[in-house]
Image 1 (cartoon, rainbow, N blue to C red):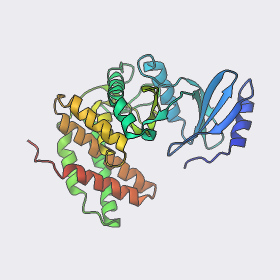
Image 2: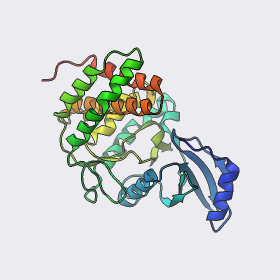
Image 3: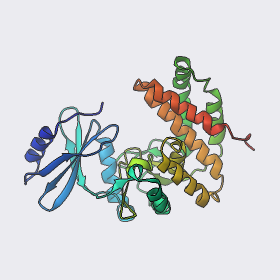
Image 4: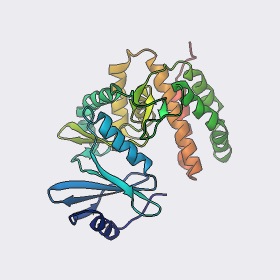
Length: 304
């Protein structure tokens, strides 16, 4: 559950944690699972985030320490427990606005810059992580192959998605699952760093450049086209994602099996979104996610 901590309690916490008292503590625009507050300590501008799980903050620190020289990632100053139910992370504040906040012309001006940052992420060294898929801050990832990661979603998703179909007016999800099953065989065993939720409110733009890539809690090891697929899945929901997806298509279509790989990962994103929303009781969004998956496969010709 997303925390709801008032500014006064945050100020009191920071006063007890820091050597110098914080100034100008103010609430920032937040994500779906965390609260965020900006504050100053001397000449330093910092951000405090609060969320139930510390694991995502640990991955933020790992990413900063491992690939921060190549990818703009805010430096993590410290992290720990905020209270009995929530964790905290203090990191450097980065000026900028999210892609989602830009108007169309400003998004169009940075799509190539965003693609370059995607490429830098994909080229990062990941030898310190064993395995594929989600990993912890100690470099452990449980899956033995990328296809194992994709297959696990299929195995876990069938029962949940059938439940979505029974409880909404959606058609049976069988075609989505079957298409996804077939596409898994077209995906390469590639080991690269994946952000896992690339685009929209996780990319900060400042003066026409990508100033920071935020929130690495969904980071994985696998095929970097997964981050491209994220822009495709959400393209009908956010115009910034549509514009970025179109730019990816125009510049990356030469990648072997590009269409099949992007569609496969788009379907995985939709299946996981639907399952997560179903667990959280949000059947409306779960139904939308499955409808989006069906929309993605409608114009598809049979696999060769």
